[in-house]
Image 1: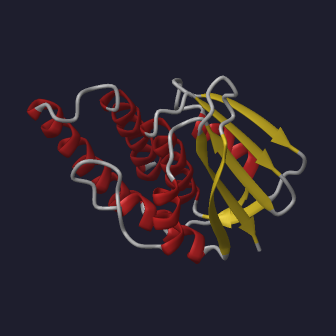
Image 2: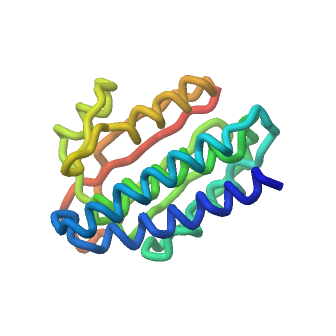
Length: 190
């Protein structure tokens, strides 16, 4: 029961984070709210960490995680339904991080292709070759003011723990009205 409560509280915190993204991060009040939300999130994560793992339908879990981001128009191409043996909460955190990063990069569209042994996330946010190179290097960095790169490092740790290869690429934007490149994240399930 406590695990369900903490997961729901964590989802509420994620909702607050998406609202904060729409505010000016330089505002002192917004900074304080952001800090408080991150502290609550950390406590939720500590409390909800459990050893419970199960075999999960990755496509279904991706759909649940992306549904929290009403500012993103999400489209799916599902040619198979790969399973992943993991903790449901950790998987949700991982997938939420991908969506949040897309929104923070200015994306309003996300296309997800799910195949036998891979998942590719394409968005229409802004991304530079420099950012992709830093992601590939695996160094802790952040594009956010005052960020410490915790999100990218936790994503890498999740992939390492689950024998998933994560790749970062520049691809043509899925929003063909603009001639820009966007980030594509490819997960290869082993």
